[in-house]
Image 1: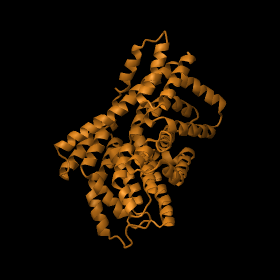
Image 2: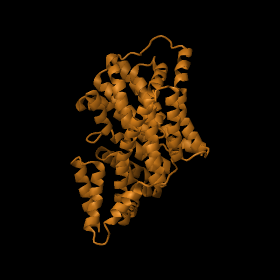
Image 3: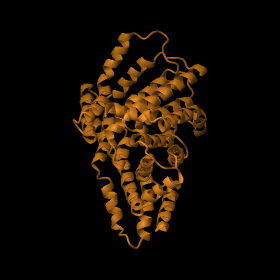
Image 4: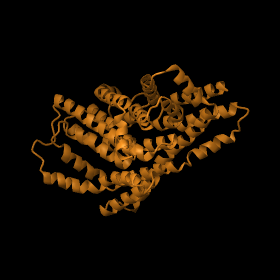
Length: 428
């Protein structure tokens, strides 16, 4: 039977390297197993595909995607960007700092790193270039800041991971605040050093009046309340993470009508965009669910756990090996697909070494975030460069300091558990 698994994995990897769509690649790998196996009915493939997308927690995915789309149509982005500008106007780097802070705040509204990267590449990069910043630097800041989005609640990655690993999504959301802020602060500090060295001056040199900051906050206050409502409602038991998605949609529609920016046409376009985005995610979820069933049936998770535990007798060595493995995987496989295929394999190993579920969750999610900006399959890198017209060679040369910064954050998450467990211990 191991021959069947080997054949399935080979087919999956070949399809991925040939740039076949991810869900078709995973289905091809699963289909190979069912076609070659004489004892397993091929009908199970369809059953597992369907059951994989019927999970109630996964309803949060289309809800939060829809809420994020409606927020963009409601003019929320401009209000939050003005607020970010008031906070960072005197910092070296100017709009680059706005870019990073905007990604952090918008992560609590959209939950989609690709949408965030595309939006900011269109809105901010041309303005950053007018301020004298290079196209490569502007694109790199946009791409790397968008990796904060899946770490800030309600990140889609956390919803998927929690539903697969049977971990509290509310606790993941709570921890995501701390990890997202860690990324935001370290990235802004790095950008300050780079901007100071290159002479990328602040947007303003005069002191920004408190009244101006308060005015900007007043216009952005209601959108910024959404993450508070989501986290607070889940923590107080008022609603579940799935129900929080529905609340987020109602709230985004309410804001749209209050700001007189959301109309019937926008709502129809927003729902169409939601359907397309959700369908692309759910196709991957269903295909990966079928492949995960194959692995489980062949006891691959159990055998890998036994082998790893017998071979590696130190949890820190295990974490180092897992980070190397996930960084390589993230370079070639889309994050959602990797989550659904690998989480059932790796979580039992982490538990066997006594690693906290929440800590390991963010080790995994953070590695996938790095993979999204790393060639050859770095989706965020390609989206950002595609919108701005930046050459990949220039992007990678400019990105070196930011890769180092993300590496430092990954080491903190991996070897300093309090970074990921502090918020959970405090509130739970």
